[in-house]
Amino acid sequence: RRISTPLSGGARFVPVLSRKGGVGKTTVTSLLGMALADARDDRIIAVDANPDRGTLADRVGRSNGRTVRDLVRAHDEMAGYNDVSSIVARDATRLDVLASDSDPRVSEAFSDDDYRQVADVAAHYYSIVLTDTGTGIVHSVMGATLELADTLVIVAGLSVDEARLASETLTWLETNGYGSRVRDAVVVLNNSRPGAPLVRENELEAHFRSRVRTVIRMPYDPRIAAGSAIAFRDLQPATRQAARELAAAVVEGLRAPVGAA
Image 1 (cartoon, rainbow, N blue to C red):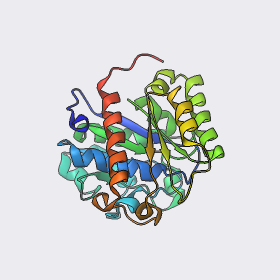
Image 2 (cartoon, one colour):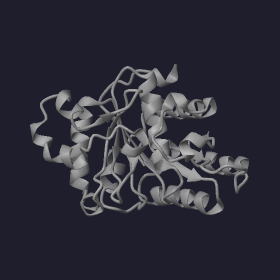
Image 3 (cartoon, rainbow, N blue to C red):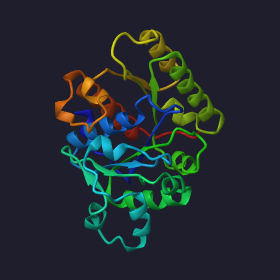
């Protein structure tokens, strides 16, 4: 299976981006991480780098009270994976999650250098490092996040405004030196509301397909919409299938060398 394809070389970094809150970026990060961890034999971690009190650990439901701040403090003392595993939370699929700080004053202070220290530790013990980013494309951590990225996942909601912001995100990346990353990116059209979407999905998909490598549709799932912890095996089959398609698309991008922007 494509998801379980071995990756040679060092750790791969995959940021999940969106310019707008509420479109399901954290949900998509969780689903991608769970689908990867469920199918692969190596270690996968999802890092919550949101400076506005991220909720990634809540979605995985295994929070142990430790955060990125604990990992940054312990950076120089990390002697092995056991030290890391005492800080991260792990879900039933074997996805490790590093939570952001629940105090917004502290999480806001999470800097470029802090992210690099977290990335340095993660690169030693994990094959794939997902990053749930903040919504501000220019916030402090984003520079290091994009610099280390091997491939990008951009999340778009199914309203005109949400789709426009996702498209503008691609344009910003292109004009700021990340053109090759955009061409290799995966866009997720995330349906987070019940009922018919507010836009024509086929037209939206065609638009994004003209700009990125592939587009994945994530269907509405009431178990996710409830906002509680996500149990991968309890999701609707269509949701799990879409998550696996996303994971396969990401692994495919990580196998291919990326040219200069």
